[in-house]
Length: 183
Image 1 (tube, rainbow, N blue to C red):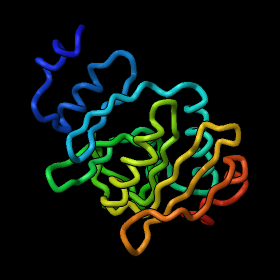
Image 2 (image 1 turned 180 degrees about the vertical axis):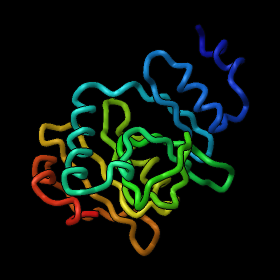
Image 3 (image 1 turned 90 degrees about the vertical axis):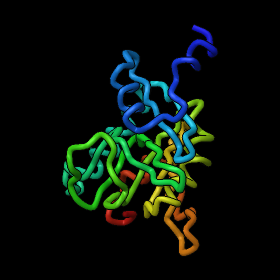
Image 4 (image 1 turned 120 degrees about the vertical axis):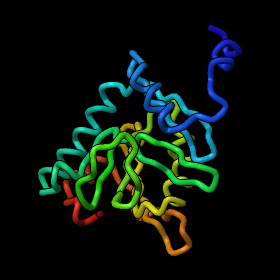
């Protein structure tokens, strides 16, 4: 199908309900996200290394006593914007309390978003999402690079409302510490 044919069937404005419908209709496991400005991103399904990294981080939080109902992989997050809401699906989210059953969760209780970079997602994860998550007031944002060390970069929201790099370390080092040292 050509881009022109797809374009004829796309709505002029993509809502969060549209994203949810697109995701549920997709048989290939892709994630559909939009920025608050309405920029659509289609993210391929994660590979096995991506899944292992997400699982290791989830277990790290869980083994340290973080409640399972406050840890979510691939949960939809509503990103407020001046012209409307965007929707992102981070790889891992950490919440201050359990969340209601919803497709798109508000950022109110969100304390940490973790994105595991995949080929092709680096610019979105390191530029667009950094600005969006900071503007939404999410206190912490971490990225995990897919380099040999699986470098984790920890960002904290600064007084000026932008993220500041707090630490950078290999994933193996991070997993030898306690989440309480970082969150």
